[in-house]
Length: 188
Ligand code: B12
Image (cartoon, rainbow, N blue to C red; front, side, top):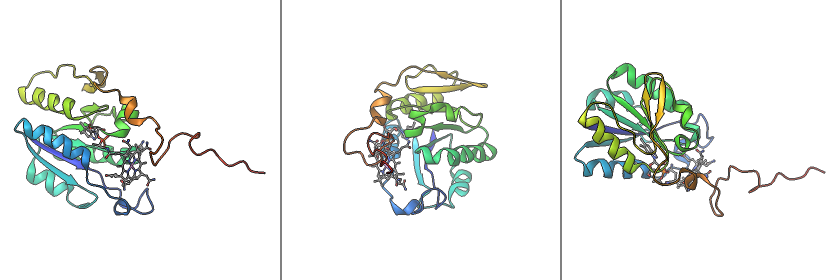
């Protein structure tokens, strides 16, 4: 199958320093690609932070069967818009979202333009999903994967590795989401 993996771009809409202020290689997508290539899928990664204008041309020239999107919480709205555009251009292409926000709040992606939401570790469920899609017929329950069936998303079971382990606060992480890590200063 032809698989396109997308890292979203926000330009300077959310972070003042923009996409290029703190850019790392799209490691999650590289892991997913490595797994999919093992199963002989044709895979491309498009990092929209570096190539913000290439989405439509790539969709139209590559004609992927499956598009996988990663993202943090700040990327949710952009990923929803991207999937809507994608479905309007390629109605039969499957859309899969994963990453930090999909792990924390998968229900934010329970919308018609998204077909699968992956929680937690992604390589094994993504491989299993691609195999199932390639085989055709209904997708069996896959741990960590929510599958859209009409208007509802069906839970394939707990992820193989605990989703919480990916998001819980640990000393040394750089962006705490809890108020205990950086307590508010008391105002005299
Ligand atoms: C390295 C890192 C960075 C690096 C590199 C980031 C980059 N863009 O490449 C730097 C230092 C630059 C960085 C910056 C920021 N970061 Co940062 N960062 C991390 C860190 C420590 C590891 C992320 C990583 O590379 N993991 C390795 C990859 C392989 O794992 P993964 O992304 O989780 O992917 C796996 C699964 O999620 C899943 N998956 C992921 N995508 C997809 C897609 C599909 C289709 C599927 C099926 C599966 C799937 O499969 C993958 C393999 O198992 C995490 C904390 C953590 N411990 O995870 C925070 C973290 C992701 N960062 C966070 C934040 C907030 C930021 C900043 C916004 C901070 C800021 N205020 O500036 C910036 C954003 C920069 C930017 N422009 O994008 C938050 C996100 C919170 C959230 N709710 O979204 C985290 C979770 C830290 C935290 N606990 O708060 N970051």
